Image 1 (tube, rainbow, N blue to C red):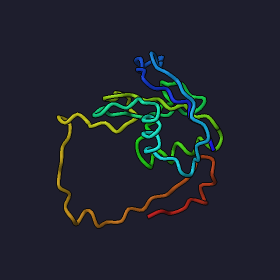
Image 2 (cartoon, helix red, strand yellow):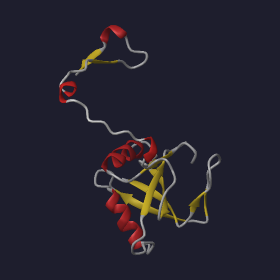
Image 3 (cartoon, one colour):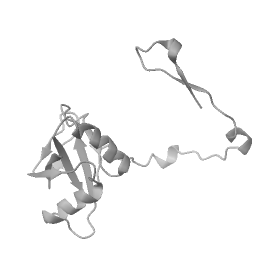
Length: 149
């Protein structure tokens, strides 16, 4: 179980020294981390009467101990929820921020500049080769590297 400190209705200032201004704060307690999903965030926003038809909502969570410049992460899909859960086990209150209409924060996957995209078809013969990789954590004994295909 954990709590969310929900910051909503505000805007982010620019980097560096990012802040969330002109917003409101509510605490949502008693959330089960194993059942939590992005859809729950949508329901919370509806209960707070903060949803307007046709308005997109972007959710960001802040890693505990980090600032808003470098600690914000997207909260928009299952992979993001799994990342979010990794902080819930140690920190029982997680800050979540909302942004309406659009987000310019680089926590969401943003489309690259289309003028710099070059699409090429890769020959099938090149796609069937195996790549041998090694995995090593810094500080581990290099003789104990695990091979990964």
